[in-house]
Image (cartoon, rainbow, N blue to C red; front, side):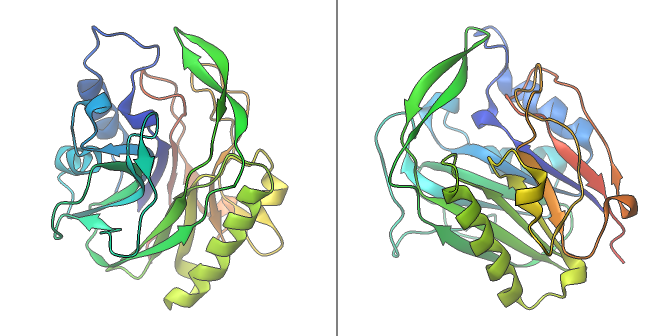
Length: 268
């Protein structure tokens, strides 16, 4: 089972170039990954800035995937006007559900049949931070307020539980969110031997991410993609060790400010 985690920066070509067909670049990279399951972060759902596409659904079409799901972290454009999800909102949009409201969040696409989807809501931090973003090929500093987050879990027909998330960029708050997800994973009825937790954790410390009971399965700096300096994207397991999986690495190929993480694990 080949599993991938990738922060897509809403399918933005890097370096930015208005003459580049970003959707075509993304599709080519998705095919190159040959994933059985891919968890994506920072994806748009029918937002104008990314061409009014269902990006998760488009990836599923490229992969010819059996199932996909999108979990909106917010409704609206995160760069402009947005609102928090409410209890009455459709919080998991799938290939089998009604169409949801335009928004931004995380998603998962699987060639393997999904038995059930699960979502954990995570509150955003009450404060923002200064962050670096690519502008004209260079990183520039901006103040960014935080927004709600979530974790999206897929229980596969083969018995695995794969959880994808994108944690807050606010230090310590993201660590609290990660611990919430780890506790939540125990409630979903899957043996720890078959649980993978992955995503953009925004925590540049392997030791902190692992804690006392989880193993970090991946290595390597992933951000920024064109000259990686920090490791903030991870894959975790409570039972597997790095020696029991094969990690496949990829160089920057014109898409996103993160590199994808990928491992091959036995699905037995």
